[in-house]
Image (cartoon, rainbow over all chains, first blue to last red; front, side, top):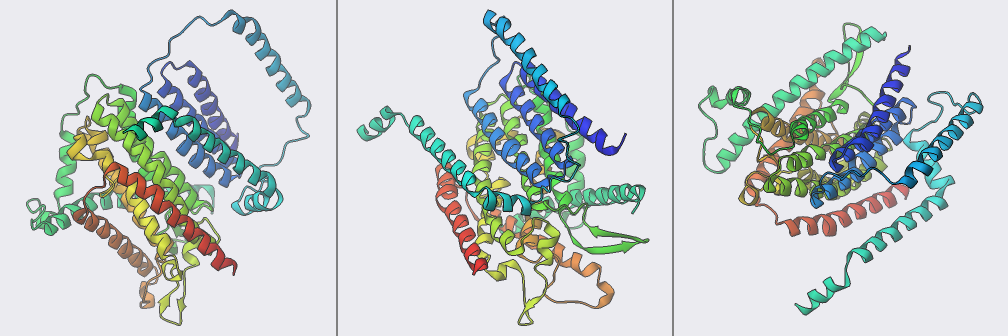
Length: 173
Length: 343
């Protein structure tokens, strides 16, 4: 077994274990930390593929920034352990077969097309220069449209967060 | 280089770097106590060894042998993991920092840094952005209101100032066109008109540098941005419930982060190991390292100087300053640099 394969399997195992743990844990902060582990392991997989830039961004943006906000919110709300129910009957009747069918479909498609779509390791050219060219040259319009979309989302969040009563109270004071 | 040699060289370099870094951490603490002491008309440590030079060793022994208290109401797994996380991320970020040119020892040609990756700067940003978890989780898991407030403040402050920090570096990146710290330093070699070094600070990155310095002080939770551990309001903030070695780990992480910040300032804005004057060729391998260490020392001294001089910000001032002043300045610097380079 090559070192590359060993690392791939290790990161993959951490990733899957983190994802399972995320669902299994009852305390939200443990779930959030598992998600961070998943993000970190994914960054490791990106590194193995030769996409260093994407790996670094994965760490900075997802594991570093977004998850900090998750943890911050959990800490701020002081969210306690979740309460377990036995689960709804609909979830068991429809969810489990649905999941099985979905998983089978994905596996079937992957198996059918294996060998045709696999790229050699490192052929991705994930260096910053290539990604910059792609983002700001070839896909400039979608990139800018996405940024406007995010801006709208931010403004929407601000509008939702400022309650009308709060501003009235401030005026009254 | 065969894989065996590579592993051997890497292990040796990692061990050496860690040893030097931890010694530097210990003596930065000593330097701080000494310098702040003199600034406040005191002596600082004088009892242990000449000039109190063995004080760090005495402190280390004290931390190791003190009782390791764990308060009864803490959430234990995270309470133990938090200081470990803080110190691990603080020590990891040093691995991509180059301290000098390539050297050849016993036929092995190697750079004076653990590894040269082409996204070195991003890696440091990524690792330091993970460092906030140590502080935040310590505050939360301690189950103490002061700790929780400290942890909340730390995460809000670090997330806010990280944006300015990242943007302040973009000017340098535009000018050097690489994320590799070695390439950034190499781009700063040479002189203008034969005497002014081509360091980025002399190429118009003065605003970028100032923004970086202020944001980095906030990132490392140092005065005047030490609100997460403001002792007048929060006892000791996020590490209120920690004692002995666990407390020492937070301390080590803070000082290791200070050293990383000083190293980055040197590499990105002050030409890294390029000295203002050359030396005799005998010292060709050592002189760059000397210049690098000298510059880092200056930055550490400024850190301590600022600590001895400035009072602490109020929390609303901290946020207003970060978002309404520092961030626009950083963006203006990026735009100005981009226009100047494109010209």
